Length: 105
Image (tube, rainbow, N blue to C red; front, side, top):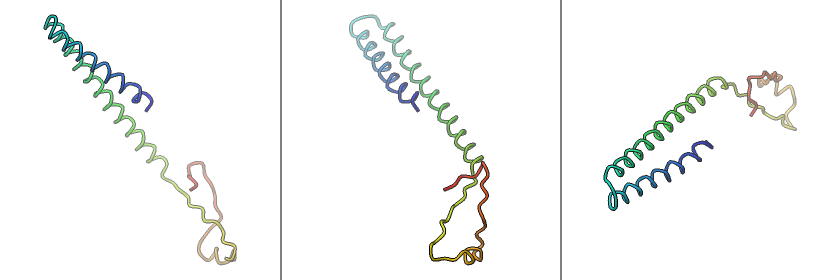
């Protein structure tokens, strides 16, 4: 996320500067330099979009793998002050055993 927040403005400003330079070169100088700057801008944004796509797919895959490995959730119900313990045992509440893969909510 930090890389995305750092690289996005950097790529945007770099692309804008390349396009401004290309416009200036079209008006005052050679067209070959302007075409080179436009090609540089296209390459910059193509690489940026490719990086964004690969990064997004990687993080989605990592998230789905995390969800697959951390599915066990245990809901803890606090004992009520007016309910006797025999009534809780009739409801099927067993003493809680915690394993390392369970998430307590």
